[in-house]
Length: 235
Ligand SMILES: CSCCC(=O)C(=O)COP(=O)(O)O
Ligand SMILES: [Mg+2]
Image (tube, rainbow, N blue to C red; front, side, top):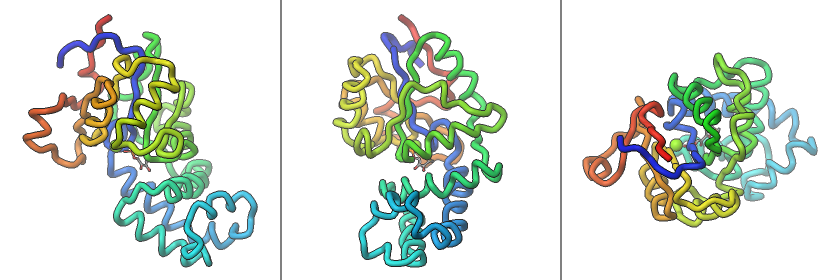
């Protein structure tokens, strides 16, 4: 991997980049769906739940069971719908706060983020998971506790925009007050990487165990790493 120059900011995806896809698909999504009937029924008229409910179309929020059916369908096809992502964050809170759920990160991640932070790199998250869910996710990391203080900002598809269009990356760079070329974006998703490159960012595909296979064309076109340890920064 060639040395990367001029990087002030590292923008990180979550699922498939710093944590296994299996944790999201086999732990977090099932936790939300298993607990949704009880939580939604108990809190249906609670003002705290209302902002999450009103993000869904009226036709699917006529009752807790209608909404559970709808989010079950969305989750099965992994639709990154902002209403679903917001509600998942709400439902995961109980899991994290009771200790039922803890976040597993790949072994290289915590040490490398700490090294980058100590070297004055600005660390930023951009995930389809809602900002609220991101804060929970990083608040309860296995063996590391609360990692939220590492990050200077969190972006999701609501405050930045869709992850596969260059405008979202331009918006993030603009809000951070940096040139796009100063930002290194890391993601498992080749279309997100292409969008970041189009926006002028530097970008690397992170190929982790359990990720979707990369095509030969992806391998020819894009720079790929298997671990954050492969990233080398020059001046
Ligand atoms: C931090 S929320 C859990 C992950 C999640 O729900 C998700 O959709 C992750 O997508 P990403 O954009 O990080 O690949
Ligand atoms: Mg991802």
